[in-house]
Image 1 (tube, rainbow, N blue to C red):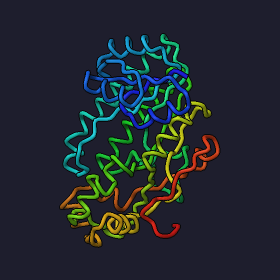
Image 2 (cartoon, rainbow, N blue to C red):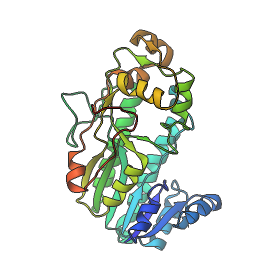
Image 3 (cartoon, one colour):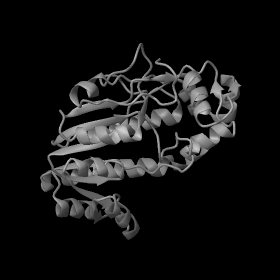
Image 4 (cartoon, rainbow, N blue to C red):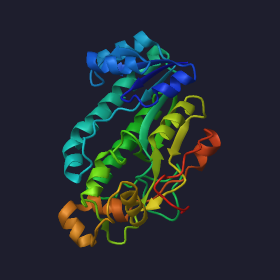
Length: 300
């Protein structure tokens, strides 16, 4: 299958292993060299340039397009996430609009879109793909859920086969959540506390498992998939375990009131209100077999 990836390189190796012909949208000659080294054929276009995007897709003539466009900060802090939010939303929404506008004329059969599996509305148990997003959450979380809902609605209306890739929090090499990543360093510096009861449930996915699932979604049934592991875990459990794994002392503990004043409502929401997601559909339809969250010493 001819496949065009916009915005990420993690799945290129897996696509090539499955004998797909892989193209990658590249904004500059420098990024073109990066994707070429990974085995994809670069197609030069800025995702925010509608004319260039259409020309790139028409040139590559892919059967499937994978949209992983983001513009996230280097550091995972409330301040840097807030500062990056406007640009990130622009890249996601305008990039998505530009990609989907070109799909029908180019004869693209399937469109895969990065979405979120960790912003479901509060409720009993783990959320499946029919669950509503958390539109009434803290300000940045609510804005993020509205963005993802808009992305999915726009893509679903185009008339090609549509797959929403609702990933959990990425961890592993090259991500924030790794010993060498930004969160590993913050935890070693005692900058990340357990907040209140720490009962916010985080759903995770190893970056390599996310890439494998993305490749599988090229051939599975269209629809939304929670690409999360089997270990949705409250903050009061995963954070001390992560600290231990990265060689840090136990994290400090603070009250919700203290965290609200120090870090803001979104950090408190993540620590105390998140709802975990269920991965049963992905396991059935995509044969998704995620590894166990490596920090945990025993099953949840």
